[in-house]
Length: 209
Image (cartoon, one colour):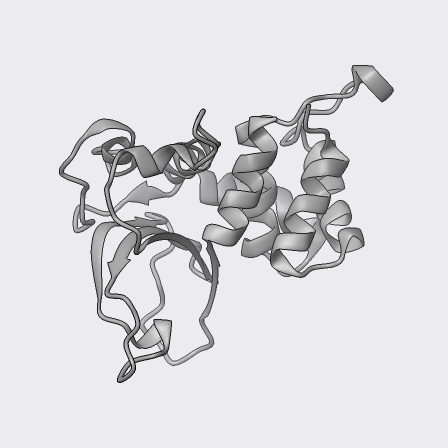
């Protein structure tokens, strides 16, 4: 059973953030009713996929802990862009880019897909056959934009030993945007925080137990 403290510890370790920071953000979410909160000890609330998604959004999409509840509410309601690259195989991966899907639903599907199967591998691996696939989630500020990406890269070679230089093909690229606040076209600062399979797999494994 995954409790709040377990979720905090898992995210803090995966993202190299102090547990105190994640706990502080999580407490604002609990007080706002965005993370399950009831009982103590054996009766303590078990963390759900929604709880995990909300805490991950808050940790990666806002600068101040007090702003976490508003950031979560905003990001959860982001709409998918019509220009997104959709997975043609259907199933769970296809649902991530379904028409009119909101970011919250798609993100939670990604976390569900990272739970472990009976073979002790992430569930989503059963939908595609490749050793060079990886997920990543991007959180953009200040416009509150996000994306979900599943890409396949060619393996490193002696002439191209660095993974980030490998040619990549997007199997899924779902862009989510805020209809009320478009990404600014000005020259002001724009921040993008990206989390990958290390974080997603750690949280998925925790939610499996």
